[in-house]
Length: 385
Image (cartoon, rainbow, N blue to C red; front, side, top):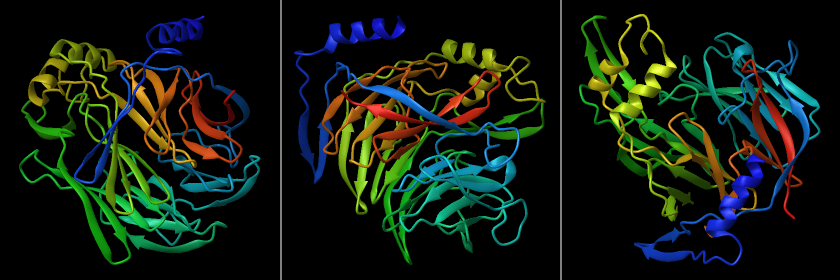
């Protein structure tokens, strides 16, 4: 019933026959593509095929499945970073185990604090290890390769600051705290010895404040500050850094397109933030300091608007998938799909799973969480009538 109601609402405000123009303009060589304000229903469906992960032991004992932990190559082989067991596990397109590599430790091919995983175009698996300050690398067959120094600290633990490109690496680099919260973030394109700065922006990701009751100065994420949502495929990068519905597309080391929709972000009040913080952490959001939610908001403020874009993905055909955020509680909104030129194709209902990876045969892999918070990787087919 929920799906039918949602479809009925969309049909009423933007169904077949309704005007849905896309406006294209040029700004200093960058194509600005503005889609319609109203959604158009996509009559696609998801057909589940198999589930991986969540086992009590063995290769499928991984239990975290999210962006930055799962990759797939063009043949449909899967690569999962099992952070709890300090290893990478690879399966073929049918879900059969190919190999496992890595273990806890500080030696070659060993992991101390594995953060995220990225797959290079040559099939090399790069694992960002925070403690080692290095990329621990494995070949397409799981063979241990020499690790590479990587002096870029994570912006947020568990979120990718590096992606392998067809022509090198894309890296997010944030300036270290030096007495000011004005800490620029740079998007770098690294190809061998050459580094190109694609952009430099001061993003309100965190603030620093002193807590006399704890005797500590803490740098904490600004409540509801926009997160950096980004992905890549081949030499293309899709990234959003603000609250507005704007996804930038970089290709070949330069900004080529800005995909937008005229959907206004929801305004956030201090009361909104207090309500969410109190619900998330009884006894204070910063244990063991027992700092109240009110004090946290007073010291760190909050973002004025709720970020619209929650996740982005690039499909093999060049299409862009965008998950919208629905509410302050993190609930998922619809998924918007754009073709390779940025043309708005339509939207899928909020309950549609968001692709972590794309596989041959119009299949996707997505994460699914059970009642005890164990996450599994679901392989499914996207049927487009």
